[in-house]
Structure formats: C-alpha cells, structure tokens
Image (tube, rainbow, N blue to C red):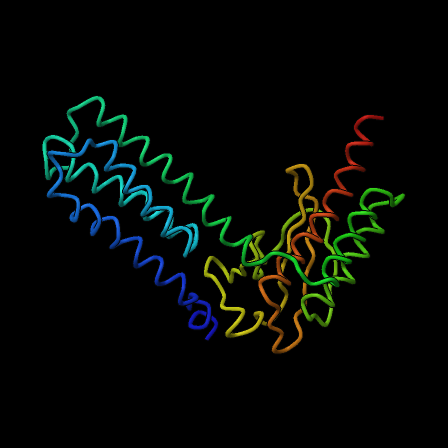
Amino acid sequence: MMVQRAARYPARDLIAMAAALAAPLAVAAALLPWRGNWSNTNVALLLMVVVVAVAAIGNRLAGALAAIGAAAWFDFFFTVPYERFTISSRDDITTFILLLVVGLAVSQLAARARRLKVVTITDAAYLARLHQATLLAQSAPAPEAVVDYVRDQLVDVLGLTGCRFEYGTLLGHPARLEPDGTVLAGRIPWDVDGAGLPAGDLELRTFGGGQYYGRFMLTPAPGSRPTLQARLVAVALAGQAGRALASRASAGAAS
C-alpha cells in the first residue's frame, strides 16, 4: 500500500517529464528545414530555451532530461555526419558540450527558482518562528536551547504528535523530509498532499557548515498534510539548529 501511494507524482511534474522527453525532439525536428541557413550556435540557443521552459514548469529531473535530450538531438540532427550520434567538427563538439553542461546547470537553477517563487514565505507566524530561531542560534548560550525550540516549533508547523532529536549516527531507514520539502519513503517520492505524511517516524536531518550533527525524528498526527511551504519552514528551522551545533563545534576546535 505504501509503495502504491508513494509512486504518485504531482500531475505538473508528470507533464513536465513528458515535455522533457518530447519537446527537444519536436523543436529540433521543426528546425530541420533551416539546417543549412542557421548556425549551430543559434540552434543550440533555441534548444536551450526549451530546456529552461521545461525546468520552469517541472522539477530538477525534468530539467535534466530536457538538457540531455536537447544535446542528443542537436548532435543527431545538426552536426556532421547528420542523423548519427557522431560529431566530426571541433566547433560542434564545443557547442554540444556547452549545450549539455550549461543546459543542466540552467535547468537546475530554473527549477529552483520556480520552487522558491511558489514557496515564498508570506505567513507571518512562519516568519516569526524563523526569526526567533535565528536569534536563538546567534545568542543562545548552548545549542540545546535552539534544538529544544526547533523541536517544539516542528510539532506545530508539521502537525505532529511528537518530535525528538537524535545526535550522531543514522540508524534504520525511516521516511525522510528532504531539503527541498519533498518526502521520500525509501527512494520513492511520497505524495504528502494526497496521502498525508507517511505513518511512523519521519526523519529531518540537521547539518551545519556542511557537517551532519543529528536528526529530528518526527511522529506525524494521523492525516497530517503540511503544505510545501510548511515543510520548507521545517527544513529552515532544522537548519538553524544545525548552525547552533556547528558554532559550538567550531568554538571547541578553536579552544
């Protein structure tokens, strides 16, 4: 039952992934009549527009698929020898590499920008929680005060029945709240909007300065369906706990 529910993707992402597979090929085919008149640089730029458009409406996977497809069809249709996945011109090799690398980078940035636009924090209560956590991380005499504050806020923000913080080693394979607000059950995205948070413990890992310090173990209330905005607020709160823990570690190393 869990696998069936977790396998569902939001409709927007499914559409974007379909577009990622079809749009680069369709645009490349549409440009074929002008193959002898347009420079390959111009063709690559137009294919880049397709990559950005797909990433803007979809997720990172869709953007990456579009970038790979754009580079592949550029090679197949517009580099000599035509209609083979082979490139003989040094300039075309450079253009192909740039299209692939820049396409992947730009697609990820576009996907991130789309998410940030959707989840802009406008709720005053969320802003107040984040502000207080930031102040505590900067001024609390011990990071445990920040951890305790964040734990209490997570209960309210995510609709939990309980929350605890575990230091150190990761144990088991619970569902996980990711930095981008998605929830993974195993390696499969979980449809929080449709199915609510998965039953059982859900982990939210805490990092500071790029180092792992522990995790908040979340126990969702039955039927809890926190919005993407709420989940991102939870991630930001956990980040403040991580900063506080990292500050203590840095102070200890300095002494």
